[in-house]
Image 1 (cartoon, rainbow over the protein chains, first blue to last red):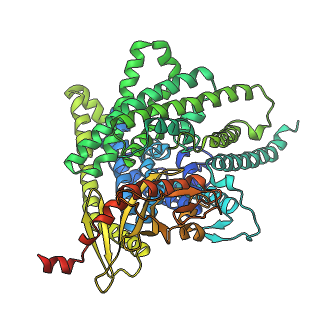
Image 2 (cartoon, chains in turn purple, orange, blue):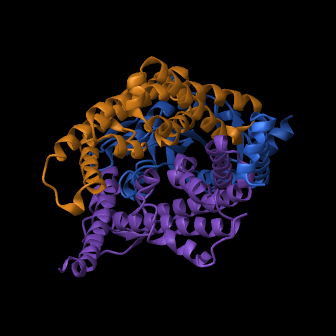
Image 3 (tube, chains in turn green, blue, purple):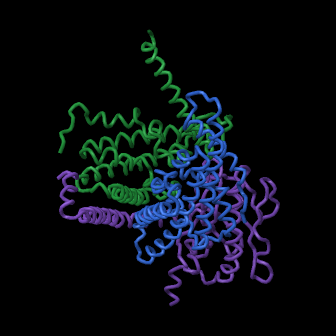
Length: 214
Length: 194
Length: 220
């Protein structure tokens, strides 16, 4: 096995997924659940945690088995492993709370086609040791959950005047119903991406100025 | 067994609860392939075909699993079947039209991770559609997906010629447009209801 | 052994074996994981289901001391009070709502020939809009005494259940829609209408058969 570079610590693997390489806002992966289940903050949080769970477990198993998976069938085996853990999460959620399971519906099963998990298995877990893969899974999963929370919170506050079911805006506030409708999902994500692009542009400007000077 | 009429199911899947604009399934190809009209129509056709095949297979597999009493294998079997169906369609397209195959490029294998296909299989199982209802559902879903894709492609082709601020270009503006399309499609609510 | 070495040695010994080994081996691990978790969670899931159903039955037929399940074309649940008197019969109905399938449990009292309440079991309607069918007090009041008495021949309802615009309810068999959630309320009204059309005559005509468990045991 190749020696792991000492200067990249587990902490970096963890933090990377949170912001710098955030799966939703930077890599733009796993869009479907981001839009579909974020019409309330609690749905977004549950979906995020479920995805985190699957991501960490599948990263771990893929990493442990990485020397035994031939290149030609690697995608097929990754998908098999991911589908297994999604089924596991599905039954665990049912056992934990049937109501929660019913409000998320088929979207729990759809975690299996979340490009994020496959992409991490392919890009990271199949090339690094289990400990780093767990860290990577945690980081990406937390970043994903964070993104879902941002989306869910904005949509719920503006569209329903509440957060996690608790009213946070005065009752005189007329909710922007569109925010909890599918259109609102698109708008909210577009708005977040706009914000991030804007910030990126600002930072690029402040960094570029010294270079442009003759 | 659902007692929705075939017409209701078709209209529902195509317009009222459009897979992309209402259920958010198939966003990745929707954002990725919709920049050109030609690729959009072809992708739509490929997805519709895969959906029909997948719907049929999912119905059969579900019947088998119910008989065996192993519902927990449902997700894995669906995924395996979808992956094989895509593989099959890829070989078919390669044989029938090599130019189309090259035009579609990476997008065909990407259909495997297309939530729309798996979503289709899961929805039809949850709603207990019979065989004919499944096929009509798949046809409607494919038609709806193609419709959304084509509309998006038309708009994006025009947008490419417009003057847009830097921060808005790319995914952000596509999402805004998709939001407006989604709102427009809400006008179909209640259409075809019994 | 690195994957590279495996494939290199494949070239000499034949490519197929490691692929089959990997797929089958991983397939077995996955199958064991799934079956294991399934068996482990199955009892709890069953308990959850039963608890959810019991709570729903109590919600639509309050005061029930005993509930007995009758297997007709679909299961119906007869609820009896502490004295063994029939409180009512609860059964499920479902239909396509705005977003996805809506499933409800409703209670029918054959003595007074009314529907006494509904409880939404499953709904993925839009939060704040369609999901009002679950919480809106005014909407739920519609079902506190929904008239479903039979016509003279006892084979069908005298007046089919009807959905009317919000605030326009004049008759006991009508349901006020929720403004802003027309499709979801229409789904509930529609499924009740269809289900009541089919079941209420049957349930009314077989109401003497609904006896508590104790009576049934004594009788036989």
